Amino acid sequence: MSNTAPRARWLLASTILMAFAGAAHASPVDTTLYFTTYNGGGRDVWKTTATYAGNGTAGNGTFSPGTATNIAATPGADGIVLNPNNKQLLVGGQGTGNIYQVNPGNGAYIALSAGMNTYEVTVDPSHDVVWGGGSEGNTVTFTSVPIHPAGGAPTVATAHLASGAPISITHLTFVAGQAAGTAFYTSGGDSGGGSFGTIDLATGRVTPIFTNVKYAHGMVYDPFTGDLIISGGNELAQINPATDAVVSTGLFGADVLDQGAVDGNGNLYWADNNGNLLYINYSTTKLIGSPSNFVSNTFYMPQLDDFAPLVGAGGTNNNTTVPEPATLALMGLGFAGLSWARRRKS
Image (tube, rainbow, N blue to C red; front, side, top):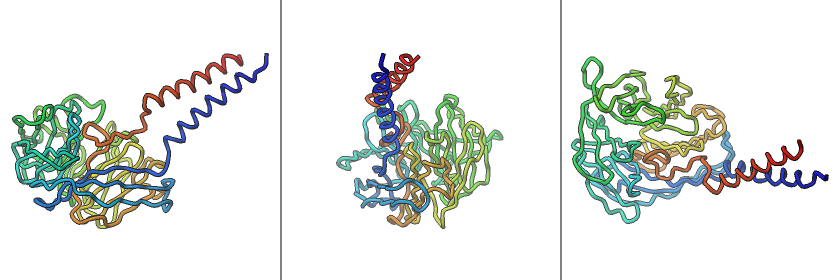
């Protein structure tokens, strides 16, 4: 019997798989970013679209941040995330004692009592509460605010070391597989210098992993590498959350790196309080400090503060490399075709 039919099916399956592989690494990269500026009482919540066209290697391609569009002027603005329950933005209210829920479509906002001055914010994996840190206001408390539904009495707790000594909390980040009720924390100013470790959210007890490090302020979990990316001063650090090993570090000019975002595909966007927008494409190296990466670090607008996460519980687009159902179906056809062809050949 002729083997023309199996060969045709094999070619069809291969074409489908190659098409999927090509789509996963398509260029250019277009990303919608939500961010804040910290000049409280002014045009604080913004939106833009950033584009990168290139292959991700040093010096190749062009990064173009779009013109910013103002969304809202809240009484205070710092950390920013998305409420996954209603697709509204949640913004740390700085010294107002509130977290503001902002409609990204029309800029209307309401105040949610945080029980304390709140700066960096993180959505809990349960999607029921948003956590807020207050270390930029020189406080040793942290808070959880109901967001499902939004509003209600906040829960304020004090963070402390094993000795009982209080410690400030800047940012909290959750990692898949971590013990329930625990998170990673940072405790340090924008300019760097502080500690990084884990916290028991029920008791407030922290366990430092690194102390007196520059990168102890902003933090995200990166599903692309499976690592934490942490910032402070002009330094980014990439840390394996399972082993606590520092995988990679990078220094970036005279920046004051606050809070940034990753898209789950090897693209990083980080806000510098001096106004720079730091972009790194590490899709090839998987190391944020590699000299082989494409890096853009140029002035964007004054008083940049925080970018909202793109992936994770509070992510604004969750645009990871996980295939959509239709793509999975195509992949299934491809693998089925390959399997069928092998059986026919045998």
